[in-house]
Length: 155
Image 1: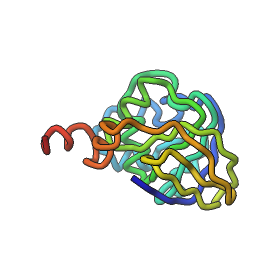
Image 2: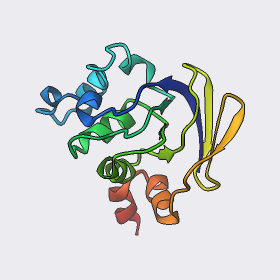
Image 3: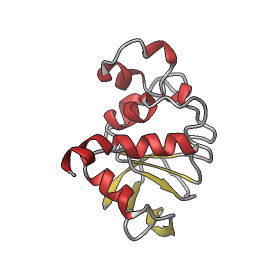
Image 4: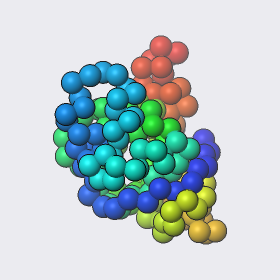
C-alpha cells in the first residue's frame, strides 16, 4: 500500500484531547469533529489536513483511548500519520478505523511532499528514503478494506 501527500508538521506528545477536544464528543456527527480537529493545538490546522500526511514527534496519540481521535483525523482527509512512536491504543484504534500510521522519524518541512510504502516499509521526505517499521500483512489488509468493520464484513 502506497500513499503520497503534503507534510503538515506538528510536535511531540500530541494527546487525543489535542486531536479532538472532549467538548465536541457529545455528537457523533463526524463533520463537527473534522471542523474542530487539532483546534486546541492550532485553530488553522483543520483547514490544511485534506490530502496531508501528518508528520509528528514521538508519542503521538497519548492520553485517553478515544477512538474518535483517529476517526477525526481520517475524516479530515489525512492520508497517513508519520511519527517515531505512537501510543499503543491509539495505534490500534487508527488501524481499526482505516487510518495508516507509520513509525518512522523523518524531517518535516511544511507542505513538502511525503511518499510512503507500507508493504516495503519506507517513507520518503526531503528527497531521502527512511526505513519504517513495516505493518503486518493483517494490518495492511485491514487498512486496505477501510478499517476493521469493513474487513470483517468482507471476510
